[in-house]
Amino acid sequence: MVEKKHTRAQFATRLGVIATTVGSAVGLGNMWRFPYEAGNGGGGAFMLLYILFILLLGIPVICAEFVIGRETRSNVLGAFKQLKTSRFWQIIGYIGILSSLMILSFYSVVAGWTIEYFVQSIVGNISSDVNFHEQFVGFTTGWRALLWTVVFLLINLLVIIRGVRKGLERMSNIMMPLLFIIIIIFCINSLTMPGASQGLDFLFRPDLSKFSWNVVLSALGQAFFSLSIGLGCMLTYASYFNDKTNIVRSAAATAGLDTLVAILAGIMIFPAVFTFGMSPAEGPTLMFEVLPRIFSMMPAGAIWATLFFFMLFLASLSSTISMSEISITFLTEQGRLSRSKACIVCTAIALFFGSLCALSFGPLERLNLFNLFNNISSNVLLPIGGMLISIFVGWILDRGVLRRQLTNNESIRVPMFKLIIFCLKFVAPVCLAIILIMGLIG
Ligand code: PHE
Image 1 (tube, rainbow, N blue to C red):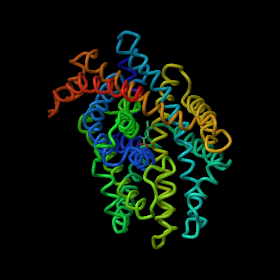
Image 2 (image 1 turned 180 degrees about the horizontal axis):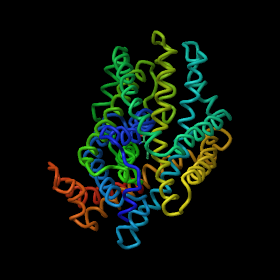
Image 3 (image 1 turned 60 degrees about the vertical axis):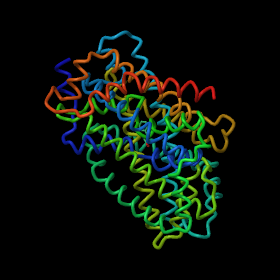
Image 4 (image 1 turned 90 degrees about the vertical axis):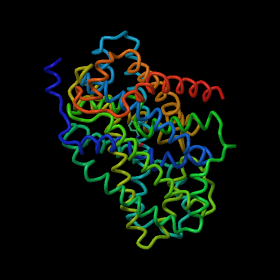
């Protein structure tokens, strides 16, 4: 085991660690999923719950995944085998692999939509005389959506096959700051729109009549989805951390930046929604109908649109790389496949289910695997995974191991050590159990 620790790749720098975990967390979840989920959940009410869940459940669960990952330096399943606990806990590994493949499948479809919009921006089809609703519906119900899904998964394959350090660390370092700057520019633009105050009001003022267990569950699912937690993704990345990585600080930085990007996405979208007289509860199509319209009204809009969709494509790619890594490490370490074979197996599965998801808006509408995967993964599997992970780290894992990992062998002070443990032992398991039960029956 000791030998294995040294043969595994590790991130070279602290920036590398943050950039890759943020690279996993920031993606379509923030820009596409957050606005429409917030829109469906009544805006402010959803936002309040979302932030509460990030703080109370999200950060502790990221810490828990980091602890298991760096302690075992293993994949989602191997980690629990290595800790030699009852076999029951290995279920976390299986849930993780299942959800990562489900998410990879439908996520690639939406990533494919960003490729389509990138191409449309280049050829000049994002202009004021286009009906963006018809454009979107026409495209997603046709076969081109399938084509882009396949293209996206093949690009993803090219990157993952090159391994962890080279491809991923380098790319994330440049791309994330750039995306951030572009989003800020778009936010400023949106704040000058006539519907700005209405949009901000919707997003930030909680309307208590909007609270329901369903909204609570979707805010929870969104928090987990956006942070890439509950499926062992952060666990897998932490297996590449070096011994100096400050777990709690990295968890807080990842959660903080991810939440910031989601809020900015909201500020970018909702003023426009109200300016254009659209419904905030439009559903999964929201971003793809609002943004092109914003771009079409901006000076040099085609260039902004091209830039934005390209960055969004890259942000999606850094997220799908992290999802793929879960199954790849599992296949190479448990199944003893070569890395290339593992990448191909993972891509083949995603190609099959991704194609079914891509056709869920047109030919396969009756089956709608897209919605099924989207909802089941975030609102059921990730919270169950997160609940088991917190119970495991709070109650089962040796307290000495937990302490050693969080404090880097007593070499750093951890300000909220007790609070994190309290959240893992009591707050997370109890809240997650209640929300899951009430959200699913209510
Ligand atoms: N967090 C990513 C996003 O917001 C999606 C993701 C989910 C990535 C689960 C990895 C694992 O886009």
